[in-house]
Length: 249
Ligand code: NDP
Image 1 (tube, rainbow, N blue to C red):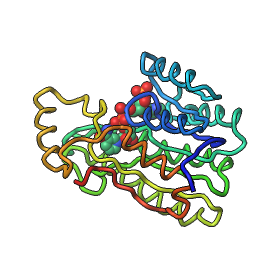
Image 2 (image 1 turned 135 degrees about the vertical axis):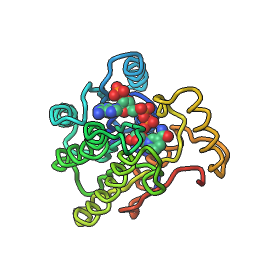
Image 3 (image 1 turned 120 degrees about the vertical axis):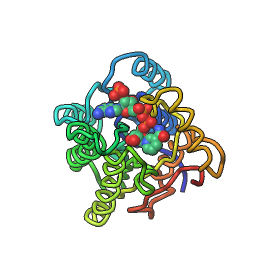
Image 4 (image 1 turned 45 degrees about the vertical axis):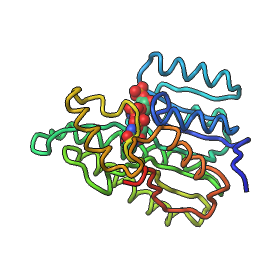
């Protein structure tokens, strides 16, 4: 048993920033060939393309929104041109949103659920013909889906839905040898709370830091470590699990 991903074909959604970027680079450094996607052109996408090029290999970066059927089709087309099978699928692309429930418009509910839950549904269902015995599907959930977070009912509902989908698919498709698991990050230091003002951000930091047994936020590469474990032969009997990576909340 070893953590070696040479010859492994991987798809990671939302790979240009934050946790997704750390996952893409960790998989590529372990030897996998990675297809990833993003929505916004700019330095994040350009610099990831440069880093992947330096690592060598047939990696691909596709501009595609996995909250749309066309976007999902574009990402899967990039996989099909490179891969006959898909060994690792990481549904990472996700958006955060903070709105008091009483003011939550249906459109905002729909925007968040479409990216965070319908997106993974569409990606998994289109990827199914490429999945084989030994493939590992890893959905990025959230610690908050279990705990609940004020102002984020739509976000936590989408992530809790992802856990239900994962557990059901693990039972439905386990017979084919395909594993489905969730990695549930705690508070990871990425750009996620970008919608907060400086004052709100300070209150957020204080509130959450107090809850962390390790007394600090996590780093994207610490989530990538858990994903590598679930992607590799080190976890061949782990199925239907939610692995909390939250520093001990
Ligand atoms: P970031 O906002 O830092 O990065 C998100 C990445 O996903 C970007 O590359 C973004 O690219 C891409 N992306 C977003 N939506 C789409 C879409 N519809 N289609 C394609 N690409 C998309 O997020 P984080 O790294 O913080 O979060 C990653 C995942 O981890 C999310 O699912 C999030 O819910 C989860 N998570 C994060 C936590 C944290 O503390 N950071 C805590 C718990 C869970 P672009 O901007 O170009 O669209």
